[in-house]
Amino acid sequence: QVRLVESGGGLVQPGGSLRLTCVASGNILRLFAMGWYRQAPGKERELVAGMSNGGDIKYADSVKGRFTISRDMPHNTVYLQMNSLNPEDTAVYYCNADGFNTDYQPGNYWGQGTQVTVSS
Image 1 (cartoon, rainbow, N blue to C red):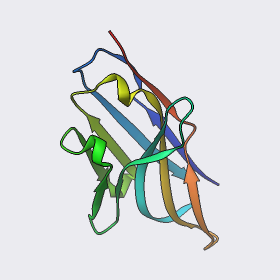
Image 2 (cartoon, helix red, strand yellow; image 1 turned 60 degrees about the vertical axis):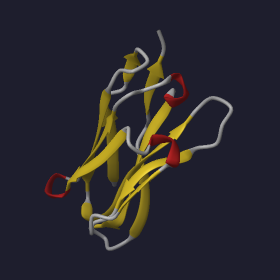
Image 3 (spheres, rainbow, N blue to C red; image 1 turned 180 degrees about the vertical axis):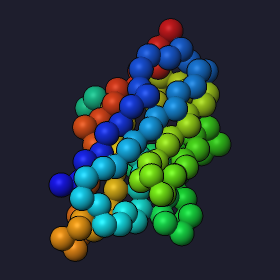
């Protein structure tokens, strides 16, 4: 079983910063793309940022220039540095990964989510 665990969420004032961390563990053979999604109350889950093994990165237009995704591939870890946060960034942030487990089965994996609240 592949498990993703997020950390780093919390309450921050507008203009502040947070850094999210997601660590994948378990019977991982190899992970390919890793990324972050978010879901605000009453809204659909949306891609925030994603990064392939080759280093290709995609950001949602709403976070470009403010958020930075990075990976520590040997440790199956992905980070999301979030700067200049505003109340519209308030959501549950989920880590996501594509890969193969040690049984050579493909899978798409999700973390349990971490709450980010931007409020004064």
